[in-house]
Amino acid sequence: MKLKIALLAGDGIGPEVIDQAVKVSDAIAKKFDHQIEWMPALTGAVAIDAVGEPYPDSTHEVCLASDAVLFGAIGHPRFDNDPSAKVRPEQGLLKMRQKLGLFANVRPTFTFPSLIDKSPLKRERIEGTDLVFLRELTGGIYFGERGRKDDGNTAFDTCTYTRSEIQRLAKKGFELAMTRSKKLCCVDKANVLESSRLWRETVQLMEKDYPEVEVAYEFVDAVAMRLVQWPNSYDVLITENLFGDILTDEASVISGSMGLMPSASVGSKIGLFEPIHGSFPQATGKDIANPLATVLSAAMMFEMAFGLHEEGALIRKIVDQSLEEGIVTEDLVEGNDKAYKTSEVGDYLASQIK
Figure (cartoon, rainbow, N blue to C red):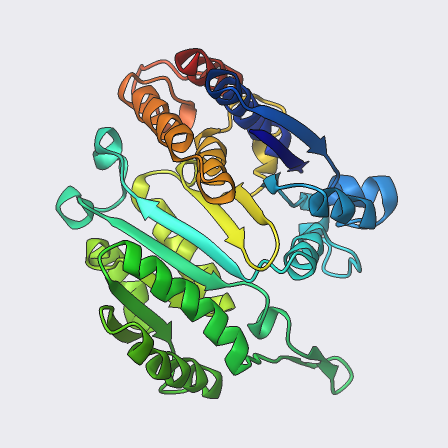
């Protein structure tokens, strides 16, 4: 199979972890007789530096010409520390989601048997955790009307949702639940917010179309508590943009490191696959960042974008093997155990595939 993949390394550790995912993907392609055409393009701070825009039209054209997008990370401290900056790397990510129609973020959270005791939560609370968040990506408060008034002393951000935006996200949630344990949780704040009441009302009307799915409705603050108490009680959760942004980061630490969790953003056109972590500027260029989340994102890409499930399963298998054998970066090392470089972990994974 011929695979055209846009490669958006981005900022910070993005290029380093993307390099390892490319190594692994190339090894997979060779083993299974695929041909990958990598299509590099700029996004984030590096794109601002080069052309003044965080998601240039040229990058968008590359993405549209591809079958899938593999993305690294976005962000730079000089923008974080400048509240007055008019152009920011993160604006590129929002623009990319909108222009590519990426309205659903798929964020799995699961545990690794060999790392179960590295989690900040007790073993008995997290064993068996295997949940998936579907976060709405292109609506809500991040895209609503915003501004300042009263001479800049009052600020406002508006959360707006349409029924159709909720329906298309909920549809993916119901469909995913049907492939798993047929449990779906709608996360909202319907006791306070009108937008949440529309979410709950819309999902309730859709229940009749999926009679096999058991649907629960929980407030976002209750879910935030239960995620650290009994995360294994959840399976598929759907929620709006801001709530999903916060809850998925909370869930990500259950596994023991943010450097382990992959994600996908999907919608009406192509899919984008990326690690959940940020650009980690403190580690940039040091060859110490954990590449496994990016490698597992590539596994999701093979499965979801191309239907290549054997390839994805093999990637996950060799990632498990690297964890069991201690071929890991410093974030997963304890005591006097050896910490491997980012590139060394990538080399090991690729060699095991070959």
